[in-house]
Image (cartoon, rainbow, N blue to C red; front, side, top):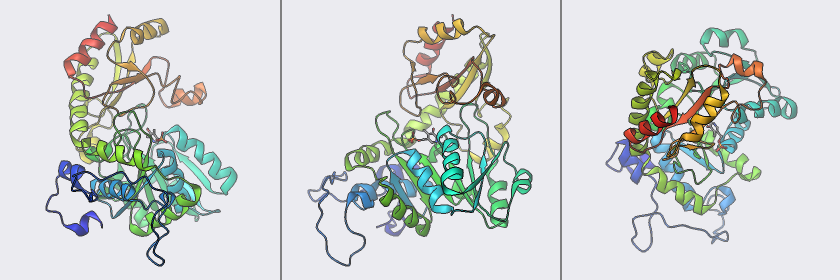
Length: 387
Ligand SMILES: *Cc1c(COP(=O)(O)O)cnc(C)c1O
C-alpha cells in the first residue's frame, strides 16, 4: 500500500506529514497501533517471512511510506541509525573493485566509513574538496559508480550546487547519493534535483525531539529492495516503539522546521550585527558564499548555523557558553530545543589541527542548532551570555 497508489486527495507537505502511510487500527483509532510482536502469523508464499528484522512490520511500512512521500520517492527503508542508512546504502550501490567520488567535508562517520570501504571491501574512495563537474571529471575512473555528497555541510554550512553534479553523473551513468539530514525534506528535495538516493539521519529533524535514533534511505523500488535484503542480514532494523515515536514526530516536521527556519534567519541577522561576533555562517544571509545557490535549490535555509566569536580568547568562549541559560551546550542537532557545540571538541575532534583549519574550523567556532523556542527569548539568552 504505497502513498501514490492510494491517491489520497492531498498533496501539501503538512498533509502528507500527518496522513501518509498511517496503518489502520482495528478499533478505529486514528493512529497506527504499535505492533510489537516478533512471532507473527505466517502464510507460506506471501512475501518475505514476517519478522521485525526483515523491515516488514506495519510500523515500519507506515514510517517508510510517510518518508518516501515527503521526499517524493517511490520507496523508502527506515533503519536503526543514520549510520546504518549510510553503510547499507553505499554497500548496496558499490561492489569490490569499484570506486566512489566523495565530497571531502562530509559527516565524520561517513568519512570514517570510507576507510573501512578501502581497507575491508576493496572499494576505492577519492575525496573532492569542492564538488563541481570539472573536479569530478578530473577524478573519474573507469570503475567509478557512485557520487556521494552532503549539503549544507557541517559545521560551516557550505552549499554544494546539486543539479550540475547530478547532470554530470547521469551523463556518465553514475549513481548519486546525498545526505539530506541538515536541510530535511521541508527545505530541500534532492530527487527533484536529479539525485538517485537520499539518506537521512532521522535522529535529527525527522525525530526532532532528541529522544530517538533512526535513519532512512529513499530511492527507486529496486534499489530500496537491495538495501532491505542487505540490512536485514546486517541486522539494522528499528524496533516498533521507536518507529511509532518517529511516525508521531514526523507529523509535526513541517511546522517545526518552518519555525526553525524563521528563528534561524532572525538570529543570524542579529548575531551578524553583534560586536562580539566575527562571522556568521548561515546560507540565508546574503553574505554567505553559497547564498545564491541556496536560494535556487532550497525552499528554506534551515535551522543550523555556526558563528565565530571575535579574537582568540578561549576563556571568553567558555564563559559565554557557561552563561547561556535556555540554550543547552549539548551534542547532536535538529531538536525542538536549541543546542550549541564546539566542533573542535566534538564533531571534528578526531581531525588534525591542519585538517581542521583547511575546513575553516577553529577554537572560536560554535555550531548552533536553533530550536522552536521564541526568537526573542533566544536573542535575550544570547545577549546576556555575550556581555
Ligand atoms: C548525525 C548525522 C549522521 C549520522 O546519523 P546517526 O543517526 O547519528 O547515526 C549522518 N549525517 C549527518 C549530516 C548527521 O548530522
